[in-house]
Length: 289
Image 1 (cartoon, rainbow, N blue to C red):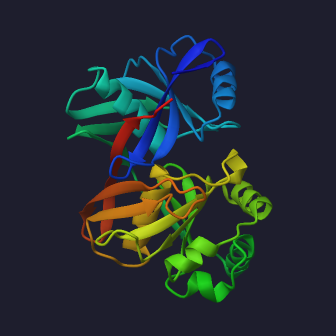
Image 2: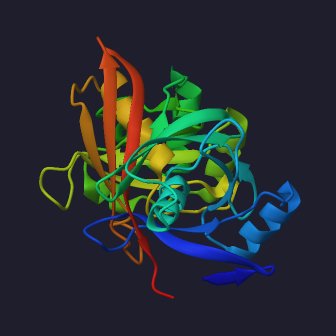
């Protein structure tokens, strides 16, 4: 436990890969009496990419509020996995389906075989203009040909929005030198959390893609696992790249320095060519303190 402003913050790593790595998230239980100002202050002091605040709900099994060190965020995949893992470990959430209330409405959750999954609903797939594509290329400091050779980048919204960029290989992805000031400016202009970059080759055979995520506008230069971003990537793979898989395994965090290997699993529920919903999940683990 880490103490922040006299509140205990449980520290869980979400989306761990073979029991290692993952993305740390803070989890504050019994947050019913906390104001938004208090939650933001605790999240800033705790310093994790996101902190989840758990309280009682009149319309769902739990209520979750999410804060980065600098801003409230409507949805957060890895903090949801962390919070659900904490509650499952304490026996408050059993195997099966549950519901969460957020500032953006209700979403379903699942606990299955030691993994936690959150429901995501595709809302929009929007191609970029030629000028936006040029600005995005400048922001990741790559030629336009590199970010369009597999498929054009697109703005994907699943409750929050990311620009998803497909690069030709993991070496290109590893060597990206993001311009955080430009990414932050584009994120503010287009209502994004940030940029989610993918490449088709992975370190572990049989997985779908490698990924990196940059969200400087929300105080996160880079993080090792992003459930909402991975969900956007799955929508992109299906809708833009026309892949027909119903399950995607995305590696993230392996190309960071230092590396923190993460594995995000996305299951699609489709009707014809359209995605009705996604289930995004993985394993959570108590971090060593």
